[in-house]
Length: 250
Image (cartoon, rainbow, N blue to C red; front, side, top):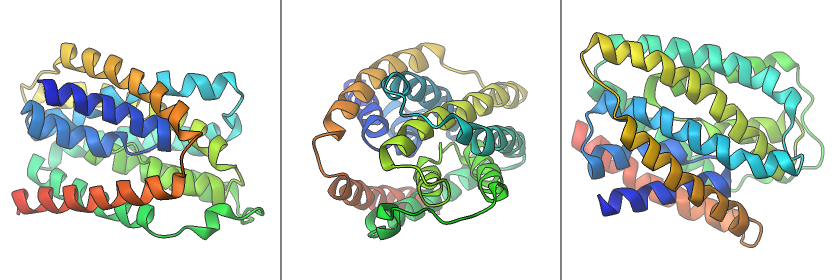
């Protein structure tokens, strides 16, 4: 389990550095390093990421780097979408969920590798709050169905449409991920019970604690290194990981 614990640390560092990437790493780690079944890995991923994100958000909240209004327009619809996505998962096989997960991974990689000059703009795009609500709902369904927190979609939306700075968007994203992942995890407990599968609570607690340490490390390191280079490197890693998951499930 040594490599699995190392993976938990990397999950936390990713969330602390980027405000995203936690779930995209957690599911493969639970699958290939721990040996959990597909649906259990997705469900436990939500519980782990919810805990790490909550703890990781504390430094941002203390520094007032959380935009609470965005939690209403993005976070609450996201929770509703996540609950619906988790409920929908009982009608989808674990293999199909992993294929969808791999596809999301590749999309996330593209968004991280691509130069996002729009994220550096000073003037936000003027849009209705309904745009944030709709995107929150869509990202929420994705979270519930395939177990990704969606930070790679949340942050661009908050920066471009909400007009937040990157730092403020990361802190806000962590709270939103906590909200969505928590409600999805609760729903998955019922879904798994119907399939006679049981959550490994000890695994979740250990992963969360190790990941929490990583999130504080990531928060400190993030202020000293180039976010642009970091995102590109992480993006290339996701391409490889996504391709591997597709290969093993097709």
